[in-house]
Image (cartoon, rainbow, N blue to C red; front, side, top):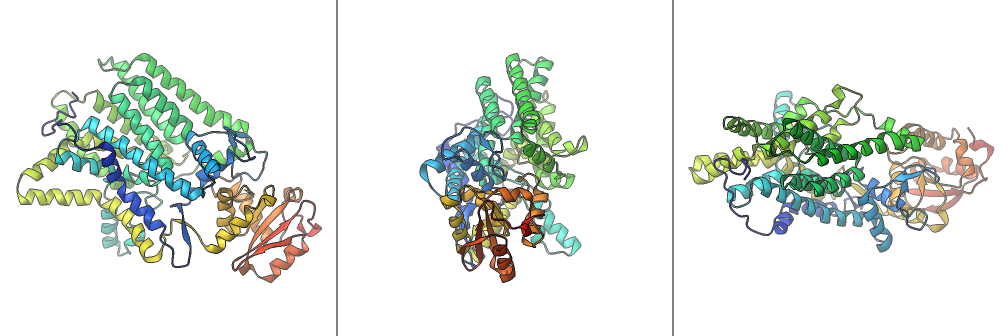
Amino acid sequence: MSSIVSSPGISARPSSGSPWVLSFLLFLPVIALYGAHFIPATNGALGTGFLQYDQPYYMAIARKYFDDGGLSFIYGLPFSPDPATPRIYFQPLTFALGVLEYTSGADPGLIFVLAEFVLGIVCCRAAVELYREVIGLGGTAQRIGLVCFVWGGGFAVLAAVVHGAVSGEAIAPHLFDFDDMSQGWWLPNLGRNLVIPTEAFYHAVFLLSIVLILRRQFGGTVCCVALLSLSHPFSGLQLIAVLGAWAVAELLSRSSDRPPPWFAAALVLIGCLHVGYYLIFLPLASPEHYALQQQWTLAWTFHYWNFAASDGFVCVLALVTLAAGWRSGGPDWRQRLFLVWFAVSLALANHDLLMTPVQPLHFTRGYIWMPLFLLGAPAFIQFIEAGIRHTTVRRTSVMCILFLFLLDNAEWIGTRVAAAIRFGTHTDEVTLSPEEREVLSQLGSPELRNYLLISEDEKIGYLATVYTPLRSWSSHIFNTPYAATRRMEVSTFFAGRGEPSAWRSRPLIAVVAHSSGEAMHKRLLDEGFHDKFANERFLLLSRSRGEATANAEH
C-alpha cells in the first residue's frame, strides 16, 4: 500500500456511501450558481446559460460541424468572416455538443448547461476516485478532506482584506486580484473549474489519467492522454509533459516502480503529434489561424503573489508531509508523480521567463494546486483528526482553518449568487434582453444565411455566431482573425468613413443601435441598404450583393 495512505494518523478504512452521491453533493454549489444565473435581471435580461464571455465560443464551434446543413467531422474557424475558411479543426467535446444541438434543435445555452451538469458531476466523480485512491474515504476527517480537495482554495480573500486595510482602498473590487488578473476566472483550484463544462471535461480526463497511472493501467492512460490532446492545446500539452517527464525520470532512475518503456515512447509520439498539429500544421494550413496565434501571444503571467495567495496553504502542507517522509526514506513513486506534476505545471505557468509568453495563466487552472494538496493531504488529515478527537480549543482551531481554506471559493460563488438575487445578474454573465433576443431571432432567418454580419453592437456581433448561421466581420475579441483591424473597420464604417472593398462582393446585414440616430439610418439607406427589422433598441438593414454605392468605398 502507498506510503501516502499508510502515513501515521491516516487510516485506509473502506469508503462509505455511493461515489456518485458524493459527486452530486460536491457539485451542489455549481447548481446554486447556475440557478441564480437564471433569475431575471432588473433590466429584463435573462441568463443565457453562459456565465462568462468566453463560454459562448464553444457553442459557436459546435454549430460549425453542421454549417452547411449536413454533418462534417471537421470545422472551419467560426469567427472567420470567410465562408471558405479551411476546415482543419476537431475536438471531441464540441463535436458532441454540435450533434446534440443539431438533433435536438434546443437553445445552445441550455445545451451548454446540460453539458455543465453532466460533465461537472463526472469531474467530481473523477476527483472522488483520485482522492479515494490516494487517501481513502473511511473516516470523518477523510471526508472533510475530500470537500477541501474539491472546494479548497488559498488566501486570496484574506490577502485582499489585508491589502485593503493597509492601503485604505475598498476591498470588494479587489477580492480576487491576488488569485489572478481576471477576478478568479483563471480558476486556480479544482472546484472553480467545475463551473465551466469544457474545463470540467478537461479536468475529468486529466484526473482519470492520474487515477489510471496510480493503478498501473498504462494503456488506459495513453487513451486519456490522446483524448485530452485532441481536446485542448494547453491542457493536452500539460498532461503530456507531466506524465512524460515522470515516465522518463522513473526510467532513468531505474526505480522498481518505473512504467514500461513503451509507455514513455507512446507519450513521446503523442507529444510530437500534438506539437506538430497545433504549432506547425494549423498555422501553415490557414493564414487566419497564424494570425490568431500572434494574437494569443499575451503576457498573462503567473506572479509570485498569485502563487502565494492561491497555492501557499497547500504548499506548506506539502512541505510538512514531505519533510516527515524524508526522514523515513524519501518520497515513494506516487509522491514523485505528484512532485513532477507540480514542478512541470509550475514551469509551464512561468514559461514567460524563458520565451515569449503565450498566456502562461492557462497552465494554472488548479493543475498546480491539486498535486500540492495530494502531497500535503496526510498532514492535513492528521490535523483534522487530532482536532476532532481532542479539546474544544483544538476543534475550534480546525474549524478556523477549514473556514479559511474554503473561504475563497465560498466568497467567489457567494458574491455571484448574491448579485443574481439582488440584481438578477453578475457583471461576468452573458445575458440577453428581449430586444437582443428579437434581433438574434431575425438574424437566424434562412433567407439571411449567406449574408455577412456587420454589427455596431459588439455583443450581437459575437453572439450571432452562436445563435445563427451567420458569419460576423468582427466577433470574439481574441478569436477573430485580425481582430483589432476588423473592429476598427466596423467602427470606421458606422462612423461614415467608408468600408472595406471585400464587403462589396458580399450581401450584408447591418445591426445599428437606435441611439445612433436618424442621420446614420439615412446614410445607410443612401448607400444601398434597406430596412429589414426594428425594435426599441436596434435597426436591421440589409444590402444585397452589388447594391453598394460609390460612397461606400474606401
